[in-house]
Structure formats: structure tokens, C-alpha cells
Image 1 (cartoon, rainbow, N blue to C red):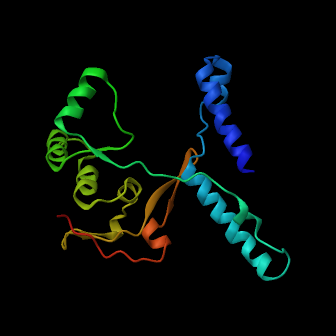
Image 2: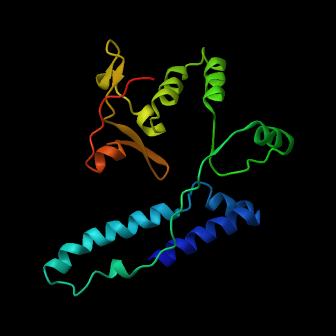
Image 3: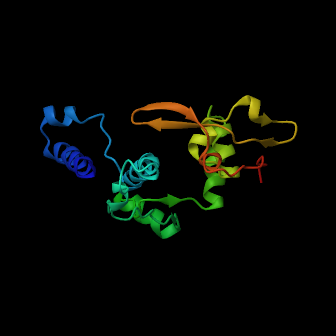
Length: 182
């Protein structure tokens, strides 16, 4: 199964790189499955098969035998003046994850102060919410008089569709206390 997912990822990349309009159109809306998702699929399979092993229906959990390459998250790098200058010269983003300094975030917020999404950007910048948590923030979990929020919902992406779900910290059993802007 995992080999099929990897082969499909390679097919998507090949079709997109090949330039054939029909092939590009065939995979236009498909997203490759990343390493972290592969690990989540493996863990889901392990969890599904565990009761069958416990009940003696299977002799061992075959999902445990699957070896996957590590899902290494790229380390974030700051946009410092040298990196900004190089980006302006070449258009090349130097690292997969680039983050702003507090000053740059403040400049951005000052620039978009009249934009309809200003409040959302401000909330995310000052509280450290994930995008999905910020977009899923409900009025019923927002306490303006107390200047705090309860993070109890998030917008999640299922392929190309979106839905609502519990934030990761709640899914793993940890309760988050209401956050206050800093």
C-alpha cells in the first residue's frame, strides 16, 4: 500500500514536470502524500490492527513491520536582512520555512491595518495560533471583555475539502488554557 502511495506521488511529479497539458490537467487537483501523512497512515493501521492481535485473530501486527523514512520537519529560519536582500535579487526562498522577526510582523500588521483579515492576522501573530485554529475560532469561544479566547475548534483540510475539527492539542488529550494576546 505504501509503495502505491509513493508511486502515485512520483506519477504526480512526473506528469507536472512533463508539460503534456492532458497529463498536467489529470493531476491538477491532486496533492502528493507527504512523509508526515505516511507516518499517520501507518499509525492508524497499527491502531486498527491492534485489537485483532489482542483477540488472537492475527499473530502479529504487520503495520509494525512497515519501515518509512523519517518525517523530518524543516527547521525555521529567520528573514534577516541578508536573506531578504538575496530573495529580492533572485526571487529564491532559501529555506522551506521562513519566519519573520517581531519587527517584520509588526510592519506587516501596520501595512494591512485596514484589510478585512487584519484581526485574524493580528490574532495569529500575537497568540501563536496555527492557521487552522485562527480560522476556526468561533464567536462563542471568544471573550472580548476578558481579552482571551478558548481554542476549541479548527478548520482542517481533507484533500481539497475543508471541515471543522478539534485542535491537535485537544486531540492528544492536552487542554489548552484560554490564550491572551501578549
